[in-house]
Length: 508
Image (cartoon, rainbow, N blue to C red):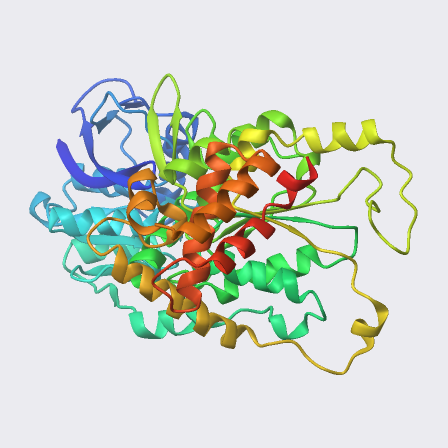
């Protein structure tokens, strides 16, 4: 007898429909085939399903069984087909009516005793179920995440018998819902606060400018100057996430399988800090079945690269395209998948190999050629894509001993929100949300300079040898600084401050 169960699989961060067809022949030697381009984990479903059915008192057919995962031309991976295959077998045995299966999408991994374990990408599958106009049955651990999607029925199950009895009309399944407002209430709660940072007022100002216009930043300073400490506090001063941003970020983390247990939604901006030994595939995404990399996991948040010159040159160079486009396309022989990757890049480096160039308390032991080679590890094209280069000197002991506390993160965030609101109003209907996203046509329209400001910028460009891209970065920064002051026109002191944030150009 033939039965059909609706399920779903992942393609990037989106889900697509998979129809699980189970056919049990009336005669023949026992065998169990799974077709439809399954990977090894899908083929192993046979053994998990057999044990789960037998250990819960259900019959496993000793006849030829064929399971087809349609569409058959797309590769299937993962253990999420265990539950639909098991339900399909019981339906083919006549225990479940086919009409009971048409309105449900099933997904879940089975343990040998019949418990249903969580799967990746539950949120994307719930969105797909809403598009299909169907209910979704999935592991109870995934149910709060799926229930973030409004307008569908989310049913959570703990064991295989619960699902079978529900589909036979002999038992209930718990229906889940999620309070969106309660989930989003934590969107301004961060563990780190600028209140703890002593001194470094210039660096704090630079990060506030970066947050106000979504600009990338590079901090140069000796070890222990507080570069990492400042970076970890940056997500807290960014505007709170909107529900749409939280939903998209949660989908990426769910597909990657790193969504925190018990969290239905990711309401705070992510902060990712990969080690400098990371590979380009892990950073940008990829693999046999393409997975999101660190640039996508930091979508709508901050990607922090500590000790930037220590990263491999090939790893750093792959950042150039996602910084410009806000997404990354991973192409493999079997698939080409695009992941969102709109992040703020914040990086840190020492001024020289030993780290003490320009430090008043330590003697630098590096030769000029060593310093040049060290800085050359970060290419000019990548530096041009980083709007702010800020020097972070060591904090004097008197500042560390001072009883005065720094400004609170919440106070800085209010100013950043005000600046962003001006930009949102300016860019309304143009698909932009901050000055850091402006293209050439937007810069020409919104970054007009008076003669004094233009003369100052021309002089700085000639003396510092700024590239065309660095020239536009200064204009973007000037526009952001003017927005922070509530000014519509860019004035000479805005240009002057923006030029101060190009320290690497001055150094070279």
